[in-house]
Length: 371
Image (cartoon, rainbow, N blue to C red; front, side):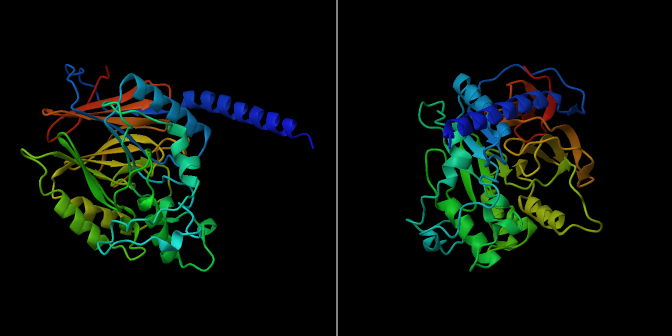
């Protein structure tokens, strides 16, 4: 068999897919729903954070967004990055891999006992390789923090079933393996945790429990964590951002069943647990880029990377949410903050600014012209 022909054909197909992705990427709808205020005078950012999610699968869209991130990072380095979950499609790390059964959570149900990581190649193949070695503003490796998404714990349908393991056992083990993994492109200190950097506190939560309790993890435990984590927020304290996979508000084209939604009620409890001390929520899950307001909280969705498509915007959930901006274009978000306030910018895979907003310390983030 002539393997060179097979390789050539494969490379040709990849090239065709890339060209198609580039052409299709130019026809995404972009909705800017508010009048734009003039851009405020520029201020140096004390902290600059890369925000993106739903990245964990090798697709043409992933490659295009990764290239844009690498270019932006080289031109204007970040201080840290946060991935918003669904880090490894479709089923998370392999819970049946040799050594996976040794992974154990500590009694707090958040951190993992040392020495539990496996050599699962999926981490690099599906996620880390695309971004390469990003550098931070200080010249060192860019700290890359991650949250858990539904696919990370094996909520990807029947394909994720593991012989000999119950759904709960497999989900808990997958969560454990993601927390245990360590590399220059992967830092997940616990199932939920905080990151303090300059005037910003990121409160990273496991929003899977807003869907349902699983693997011994409960919504009640997550509520207690959020209440404790927001204690120093506001006033002279840090500007705090809830970070999780499932956003509390979004515009999307998914089917919504009749009657009350258990997810919406449980997610509303997570938001209420912050007691109004979090200025915004950074989420993924929906494969779009969006800016919404939900009461006094701003919501940013940055999930249009590897699995980005052409999401039709048919539904707004909850109905009380106000949509400021929405697009299915592939891209990412940038959060910047200083002592006076914070701002968010969405960019597409070609580096074009799609939407910008600017806020004081307590918000709201008002849409402005992008510089």
